[in-house]
Amino acid sequence: SAKRYAFRKFLPMFDRVLVERLAAETMSKGGIMLPEKAQGKVLQATVVAVGPGSTNQKGKLTPMSVKVGETVLLPEYGGTKVDLEDKEYFLFRDADILGKYVE
Image 1: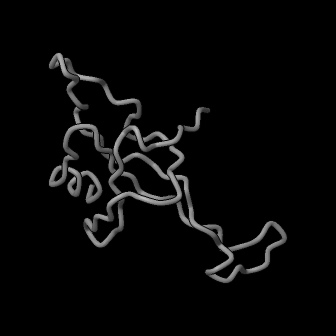
Image 2: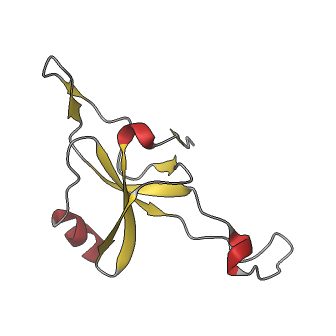
């Protein structure tokens, strides 16, 4: 698939996580179209690629706290925008991710 191909070409380094923001809600609960300003910033994202983790002072690898496919909560600001295959993704450090949603 094209999606898998995009990430074979891009692997996050160290403790970085590549995420795809979930689409903004364009309709209110009552079915009214929301203007772009009212949609707000989407802080939920799906993890699409993770780095191997960072090494501590003793040289031991600190494992990542998120895995590919998980839905996470992002901070309101920060992250580095990355365009791959005409889609927009964001890179965050593992420690910047605020939490993850569990089923």
